[in-house]
Image (cartoon, each protein chain N blue to C red):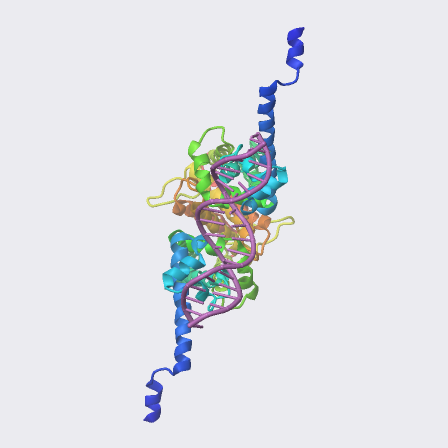
Amino acid sequence: MEMAVKKIQPLNARQRREAAKQNLREEILAVSRGIIAAEGYAALTMRKLAERIGYSPASLYMHFRSREEIAQEVSRDGYVNLLAELNAASTPHRNDPAARLRAMAGAYISFGLKNPQTYALIFMEDPAYLKAAYAEQREDDPGTQAYMLLVDLASGLIAAGMKPSKVGKPARAVTAIEFAEAIWAALHGVVSLKLTCPVFPTSPAEVLTDVIVETLLVGLNASVKKAPR
Amino acid sequence: MEMAVKKIQPLNARQRREAAKQNLREEILAVSRGIIAAEGYAALTMRKLAERIGYSPASLYMHFRSREEIAQEVSRDGYVNLLAELNAASTPHRNDPAARLRAMAGAYISFGLKNPQTYALIFMEDPAYLKAAYAEQREDDPGTQAYMLLVDLASGLIAAGMKPSKVGKPARAVTAIEFAEAIWAALHGVVSLKLTCPVFPTSPAEVLTDVIVETLLVGLNASVKKAPR
DNA sequence: GTCTATAATTTGATAGAC
DNA sequence: GTCTATCAAATTATAGAC
């Protein structure tokens, strides 16, 4: 009985301190996400950030070493959301690689267009501050997981006989990693061009994506017909 | 006789002033190109620029309204070079659309990888200062010409029966502009990803380009076989 | 832990002497 | 046209009081 009560009791002083510190850290991140999403990474200044959370600029440095460390965390958070959308698009089409490609491609450009500033932070910002994040290459890193999901998509296409054209001389088969990276690059091109160029391309991102994906699929299907059955 | 001598005579005061002013303007641009090419647009500060040309910062404002105006000129210059390389790649393959696509794609990513900072200035920088340039849409603008060259490439492919897969619902044929922009976006994705991401993609840009271009070509060729002859 | 105050720097752009 | 000197405005980050 006593023990049960004890477990429900409020946190002790030390725990409360820890919780408060954790909460403030989370609030800093939440506000940072908001600023970046609305105005971009360049607009994330320590002064503005401090003002919005109701603390002084100096206090921020109790929770983060630097502005870049905040950017790293926000970036990681963006990867989490991207991964979630890619997973949601991928899951219903486990047994249909072509449909899976269409769905994931749509989810990718949709994410980029709906979260332009976050997308820019992750993929289009000067990458110096991301090196640390990439250097880890931990398996639970959401960016790594999104990457692996793309590789899995490419593997599925290849396994179904939908192989990209051979490349190089002498000609050799394309690996799943190369295939995945090629797909990623093409999609990234659509999103990033839309985000940076004010007038070009004139066509909607969805149309450009369709042109690329559907024409690639025709090319891939050509290899299916030739494959032994 | 007098007249002939007159024509050879040194410039008068006014002409010399004009020439000197023009020369200084060109020197400012040349040094700016160098700084941007070596260190990127962010490193182009008026102080550094003034120091390198041996004038004071204030003097720069006699020749350019602002830093952005310099960026516009350098950007235009980059377009001139890009256009030249695209033209050189295109010309030998006027009668072979597929070979022309391969050559132009190679020239495009080669330009981007060899001139990363200039490429970033043109296509990846915050585009506010480019709006003026784009707004003109003059026919002699090198950027517009490069764009039109791509559209011509797409037109050539389509005319040869190499049509991209239909898109939308109800399905409709892809226009040359959409096709050109899709190709451009995919190539831009390869270059820009290589320039901003330190570790991904792991595959060389040339391989990614090959995967995209060659697989697209298979898809395009599929439409040729179906075409009436 | 949080604050005030400020250091230290860098920037684009300008005023006025010459 | 060019210079010196400086403005005005940002920025990140820190020192020291409380």
